[in-house]
Amino acid sequence: MNVAGRILVADGAPKTRIKMKARLSSACYDVTAAGSGAEALRMAALVRPQLVLIGTSLPDMTGAQLCAQFRTQLDGAEIPVLVQVQGPQRIAALQAGASALIDGMDDDLTLFARIRGLMRGDGQSDRGGIGTHPDFGMAEPVAEFRHDTRPRAVFVAGQPAIALGWQFSLRDRLNFSISISDPDRALSQAARGHVPDLYLIAGDIQQPGDGLRLLSELRSRPMSRDAGFVVALRPDRADLTAMALDLGAGDVLTSDLTQPTAAIEAAIRIEGQLGRKLACDRKREETRRNMRWAMTDPLTGLHNRRHALPRLAELFANSLRHGGGLAVMLLDLDRFKLVNDLHGHAAGDAVLQAVAHRMTASLPPDALIARMGGEEFLVALPDCDAQTAHLLAEDVRRAIAAPAIPLPPESGTGALSITISAGIAAFDRGPASASDLDSTLLLARADRALLSAKSSGRNRIVVAPAALAA
Image (cartoon, rainbow, N blue to C red):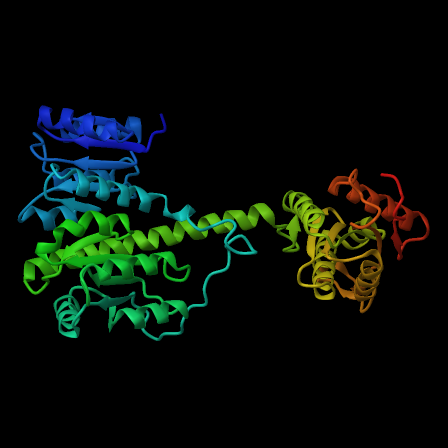
């Protein structure tokens, strides 16, 4: 059985614990139950839950107190905590760090939607990463220029007076820049990359439920999907709570925020959503940074061998499927060891960095360029034949040879002229099919051509004959 997640339930009533464990286990959650706050803290240290559900009747502390303990102990600052609470204790629970509140646990639809939403937020950093962009999703949308450095919120309601009422009630309780919008404008601005940190959307705008459709649309768009979302529902539309959470709302509030108590609670919950949104942003950036480090040579900024070889195999497979040529170059700096021996490793690093820059400037944008290790570089050129690859390799050779590469002052030499040797192997699917060839053999042919260039005097390009055996 696939486990949906680990949940720790803390409730002082044995019947409630048994019932909740059965209900959650039937939904494939791995459930641990505790009958007191102290026991919950001990169990959390053992099971490391992905979500904590705090009920009522704890014998040793309130739900708010237990929530505060989780936030300060056991590295629990980021664990989602769902607290069952009513009345005046709601604000206390939020101030203690509750991720979300629930009035009761009898409504399975709302309870499970809350749990799914909090679990989804816990793993949000992985969504939409690899494969959504040619650079593996590392590029961020261009941010709009704005002088106000506060977090920005957009409020969308059916009548401007309602959104203005929200703004009036919350503006002194939120350190946000708040603007009012309508659905069409919100969507058009999101399409241009003008995305706020958080949206507060009425469940019903012009038609019943159209606020949820706006939520779904904004969540589906690459530019706006990572914003925070809060939905405001009228009391008679509370049945939409579960749907709003499942569509991606981080929280659901009552639409009447004019009462001071409701406004205070709403402000705390909106700040909480912003905090979770920013935490997810940090996780995404950390993931992207780790991916860049895993795929990139830190000295030159080019791809590394780990990334280059699988990518070369993909390019070769694409060439087989769709036709078109593929050319591979292996380039090696001539007598590079002397650079390090005579001028020092700082000089060697400067040479490698300059070579990488000149190669990149001389080759087409779709070329795969990688440092394979030491002074050896790989270039793969999609839709390229041997003759074109030879011309490009000559461009690279001339660009690297002149002008001389400046060296750091500590090397004792102002500049150094560097030459390269290169071997080229090309595959052009045609009448002479190469069904017995793969990217590894193509690379081996280029390597043999490189050895030929080295042995015949260096500073030259050798193209492997089409029939050269690997």
